[in-house]
Length: 299
Image 1 (cartoon, one colour):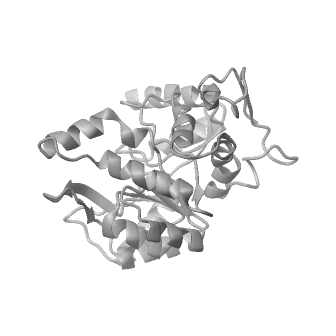
Image 2 (cartoon, helix red, strand yellow; image 1 turned 90 degrees about the vertical axis):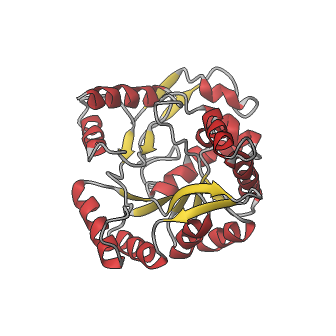
């Protein structure tokens, strides 16, 4: 029951921060609670953004039955549960070699990934892949997932393939440069290594890659990254190489395309939802204005 109250408060915090439409990236052990939150918002019972939800997300544990057919069935099950996009986890834990090279465990096979993408696309669902590099990241790109989320260890070669395939990249910079991540990595490696410098390098490279569709996303989770504070991501993407204009497009028109909702949201046009925010200054001159939203209109 606590989760329901927390979710309602979090949804309101997100909307008041100016986020009128969001993807929820998995219910993290709360079953299909994200569906209930989405539906309560749509019925006007609580205040929040319109949501695309992923329900539980697809991952395999060590004792789970596996294979492409099982993976397809999981997509169909999540669609039945109310998912409007599919979240997958092709990468597991990571570690470092003694020389500091990032090693990531792949958790889904290429055949399983291809089955998931095929089944999702047959049902008009897009696929977002939480991936930390290694074989899982390479296979997710090969399989043609719609969005690579986070993407630590992304290479120029993979970024170029993403451009060719028209895939989107969501770096979630603030969430994955938290001091707690650095501290944990340093503790595990005797103070030697952290994933953060690797991540920072690939984010800069991705933003600089001509034609790569880099979208705005946050991974905001309420714990070390409070709901309603995700406007900080605008400042981060600009710091790592975006122009303020491109940062705004990443969160609006390009973000809508990434969801497959460009017919409804993302630009101010006739027949689309009337979603507007107002700030006191010019965000093109000072992108941090978007952390101080004064007015929000949804629909």
